[in-house]
Image (cartoon, rainbow, N blue to C red; front, side):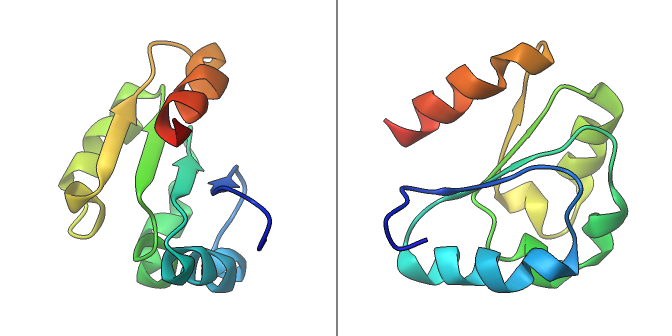
Length: 94
């Protein structure tokens, strides 16, 4: 983790990722989350607190993220298609 540039969280994740997300947030390194339709973790504020970017290609999920009391203050990015994930993460890290 110390040698990495960022955290990329991929489904499925939940409270078990809270420590890592918090460590990255405290280190000043960005936490990037990719989500499709796995929204159970949205109930867990301990994971959401350290997130910087949320990426999704699911329009329903995107709208739900925009309404979330914690995540609506984060950068939420809608991907036109799933294959944009790699390029979008690279752009964030530039």
